[in-house]
Amino acid sequence: MAGPRAVSANALSQETGVSQGSLSRWLREVGSVGGMTRSSGKTKNSKKAWTGAEKLRVVTEAAGLSESDLGALLRHEGMHETQLAEWRHSAEAALGEMARGRAKPSSEDLRTAARIKELEREVRRKDKALAETAALLVLKKKVQEIWGTWEDEDDTTDARRGK
Image (cartoon, rainbow, N blue to C red):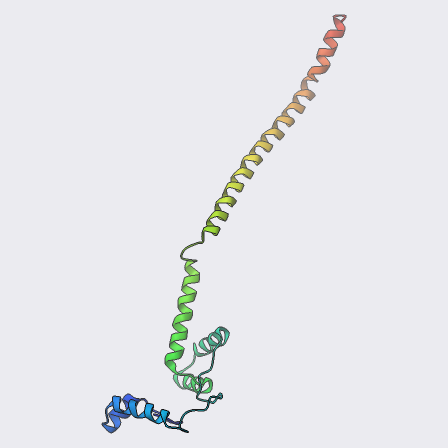
């Protein structure tokens, strides 16, 4: 249960016939005996604080490995297969959440989206009004080219009448 070739309390219980509870209690008692505890410094068996990037690296490296290669990777990294499975599950859950989008958009996001929609509607309305005004100006110019200006006719009419 301790040392480089440690086995679980369940496995040792089946192998020796001693109950798993007794074996676990003995292991705790040995840990409380002076001089038998692990040192506080980092040792090969002490737990490493893994960053998210390191976890992702190990999960991706382990993805396509055979059983023997996976075992070698786990030994090299100093971790167990259950820990790798937990990390894989967490990564898949996070990726699934990203694919679905955020479950609930924040009220700030909703206000921003509503404001954007309102502004886009206003821009469309103004574009239509501008297009209509431009069309009217083009038509006015064409009418002036075809029939002449209305102001010129009014001026010539007044001149002919002697006014």
